[in-house]
Length: 273
Ligand SMILES: Nc1ncnc2c1ncn2[C@@H]1O[C@H](COP(=O)(O)OP(=O)(O)OP(=O)(O)O)[C@@H](O)[C@H]1O
Ligand SMILES: [Mg+2]
Ligand SMILES: [Zn+2]
Image 1: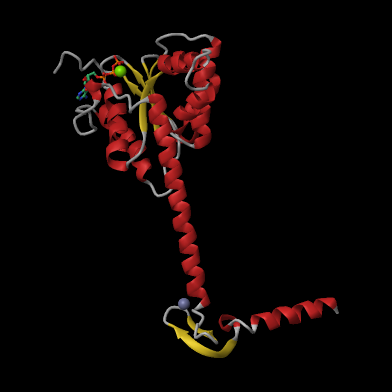
Image 2: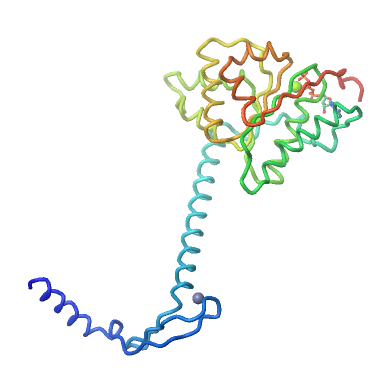
C-alpha cells in the first residue's frame, strides 16, 4: 500500500512537467532501421529511432575510449621520453633503410624478406604479434643497419615508438635506478623499456653481467613479452653461446610465437664502401 502511494505521488509529480507527459505515439520509419514507435511529449519533444540512438551512444563511447587510450599512450610516451631520451638510434645508422641495404646473395635476400615480414606486422590491423627477431653472426654484415632501419620505419611511417639499446645500457640504467638518489625507480625503468613498440637490444654477449644484471634484462624482456611488444636481439655469438649468454628463460622467449634467428655469415661490408 505504501508503495502504491509513493508511485502515485511520483506520477502526479511528473504530470507537472510537460517534457514527461506523453501526448501521442506514432509509427515512424527510420531510413536505416525501419519502423519504430515515436512518442511525442507535451512540450513537443519526440523520441528518435532507438536503434539509431543506441548506435550513436556506442559510437560516442568508442570515441571517448579512443581518446582516453590516446591520452594514456601520450602520457606514457612522454614519461618514456623523459626517462630514456629519444630513440637512441646512433647517428651513423639514422639514415639506414631496408632499401639502402644491398642484398646480392640468396641468403641476404632471405634475410631481407624475414626483416620485411617482421616490419609489416607493425601495420597489421591486430598489431604486431610480439614475436622476437634475432640477428647473429659476423661483424660488419649489417645487423645493426637492418635493426635501425626497422626502428626508423616504425617511428617515421607507423607513428610508433622504438628504442635502440644494448644489454650494457639496460644493466646500467637498472643499476642506477637502485642508487639512493636515483630519479627513477627500477620498476619505472623496466616499465619504460617494456612499453616501446619496438626495442633493439644490441651487443648481446659483449659483457657478462652479474646474476642481478641478467635479472634486469630478463625483467625487461618479460615485461615486453607480457605486453606482446617485439624485441630485436643482435649478437656476434653463435646459437649455443647466445643461449648461454641470455639464459634459458630469455632464449625460450626469443623463439616463441614464430620468433626467428637469422644468421649473418658472410664477409664484412666495412671497408668495401
Ligand atoms: N649489405 C649491405 N648493404 C649496404 N650497407 C651495408 C651492408 N652491410 C653492411 N653495411 C654497412 O656496413 C656498415 C657495418 O654494418 P653494421 O654496423 O650494421 O654491421 P653489424 O653486423 O652490426 O656489425 P657488428 O657485429 O660489428 O656490430 C654499416 O655502415 C652498414 O650500413
Ligand atoms: Mg652492430
Ligand atoms: Zn534508426
